[in-house]
Image (cartoon, rainbow, N blue to C red; front, side, top):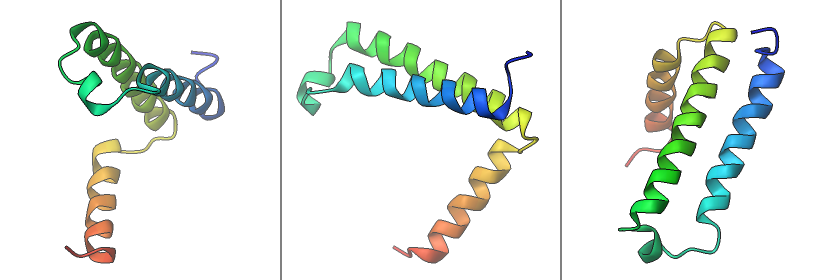
Amino acid sequence: EQFHTPRNLSMALSSEVGELLAELRWLTDDQVEGDADLLERLTDEVADIGIFLVLLADSLQIDLVGAMDMKIDRNERRFPA
């Protein structure tokens, strides 16, 4: 955990998002749907993103679910349907 600082966790999170994007680069939506091998790789990347996001929120003492709920409420007020 010595490297689990907000700065390092943010960089790790960004790297994992980049890996997710690399899997999807140049593919059409049709190519993504129904590709079991791709779905497995995407699942791994999304899991990595989730892990680093939770670690980052924990290191900053942010209630992640609470923060997301507040952001959704704020967005609904700012951008009504």
